[in-house]
Length: 248
Length: 251
Image (cartoon, rainbow over all chains, first blue to last red; front, side):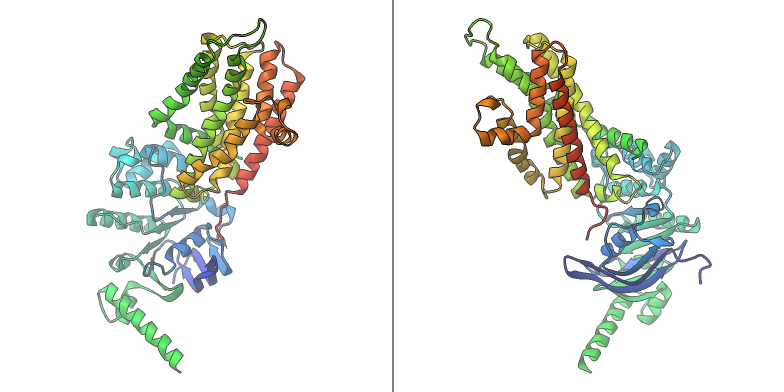
């Protein structure tokens, strides 16, 4: 479908943490230059999968290839941006100082710093201490710290949590523009309505991949234009499938 | 190692401190007040002629102990915050090398320690006439090495604490024994064999010895340089251990 090589390829990916199996054999590919949504109930393994992709979580079994290299290999550290679920920035530093510091790891210029701050709409607050910002502004500082390095792959863990609808819409527009410019985005969410912004969806449940499909396919297979309902009916169908397997 | 990333880390850590006026004030001023307290505590002691004042002995050792204790506390809390807030994990997804992070921290807090010991040494030297035969510059040098020791141990201990409360509890474990056995309360040669042996391997003991050499001799002595080198080796060793606690990947 896509002329570009896949940005992420997982093959039989297993991840266990302290003997708990969190990811239990995932096979999927993520297209380059697209927005891929990672959806699933909380506890389904979304964050663990993202951490494995950015290379901070060890893989137990299987392979995970990111931008053509094994996940976590050193050259990827320049090309992969990661925005954690809780905003991981320094609250006692200004917005600008935060972005400048993370930018310094990638040799970013002053213009890069200003650009990243402008991209999240915080230019007027650049000199404010991060701790003095509102919750939504604070999480955008975290996003700016990832944008400053112009990553080829941007992994975002629940970036829209706690944002008002206007900001959410703005952020999705920003993501779409980045994808159009060639950046690959992997965005997790547990809000199904956000799935419509993605060109492909990975539906995760209990560490297993329920399906990889487009939002349109999800609506069709779940027999509902309401993606949340469609997802629920897919889960129910999967549960019935498991039960019938057990019964037979 | 990458100098740009190291210096960026130093600037960032100092930037965090700069916004915290109260901590900076406490770091810089408290040692001078405590020195004053010690001075007045022994103000009325009667000494046989030619016998050194207690302040000359205790005040001198305090100049070595302050930067060690303060930097241990500041570093273990700052590093613990870095570990728990997710900024450390995030940093380790960037090209930064672990050594850049550790040396960045060590450099930032050495600068603070140098300022602290400049104030404390100046007060001891000029206000309370602390009897130092050698150059006060060397006193500041030893204080800075001690501060880096505090930083290194703080970085290491923060790995074994999950909360700030736990981090503070490492002080009685790591810091207090060194203060008890460095020769401040009882001269090392008067200790029983076991305590003297333990004292002989604790880093703070070497810096107290080095300070005594500086205070007692107008010229630098071989023994002082030897103590300094041992301190340096211990600091590097602890920093290497601390770097082992920074893992890019969780299991």
